[in-house]
Image (cartoon, rainbow, N blue to C red; front, side, top):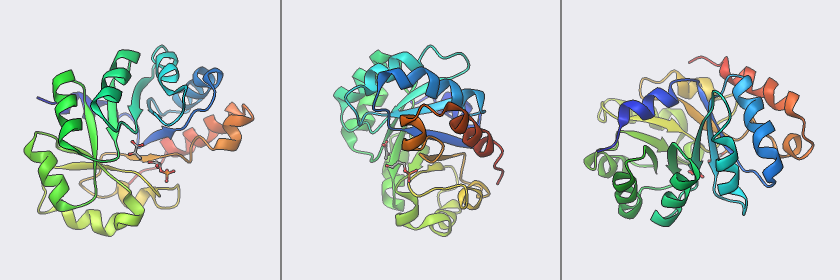
Length: 210
Ligand SMILES: O=C[C@H](O)COP(=O)(O)O
Ligand SMILES: CC(=O)C(=O)O
């Protein structure tokens, strides 16, 4: 069974979960520390770079942080991410194999869904905290709002096309627990080691209210 309460407790700590693409291992600790200091404790490290698992390992020790792994595409990646210290997993989709792996590992998973049928299929397996992905192209806040009444016991973390300009439109919905976004860790700021800028962006994101 999925520990929904633990997942919700992590996601409710701040309105925004940073979605991170980290190219260099030496960026892991200063980047994660800037985000946590700015008020965003849940860190989603996407498994999209060769160093991503090492980044998860490094971020796992950041005081006050909760590191998770995103872009989980198969059960092997789920196992590797958990072994590296990931406390939650995020997937762009919700295949039966991914759901099985999360249940076997006993680790909270945010499976990605974009339709009512996909959300219902995940719900049938016990997953009621879902990622709405890709949120903007899939229909944005008006689409997600329309799912709130029929899917009354499911909540979402919309990700993909969320920005400081539209985050509030998602966060004010009753079925949104947080949003995910990469804007708090822009590639140019990370490449330049501009941790003050990252922390300032995190602080602004942490203050967004629905
Ligand atoms: O692949 C996209 C990530 O889920 C984050 O999307 P974003 O860059 O639009 O915030
Ligand atoms: C995009 C997405 O869902 C992920 O990287 O996990």
